[in-house]
Image (cartoon, rainbow, N blue to C red; front, side):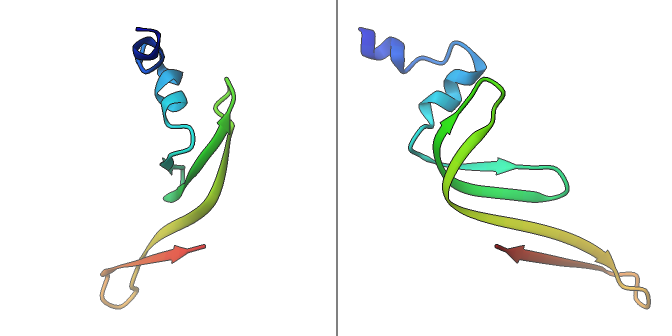
Length: 75
């Protein structure tokens, strides 16, 4: 029964605790995204990720055609 209680989500940080050593997706401001393995976190939600891929999406407007140009950069 103790194992079931360890797997329960009772508080918001419990979901993050259950994601330790799993690959997670983090959406940041200004269209930035991170994907990586969650190694650790603290009560302020600082995270230590490993094997991280960063994606930055930018949208520009073409001056002549006024069409949106979407650029996705991977780091």
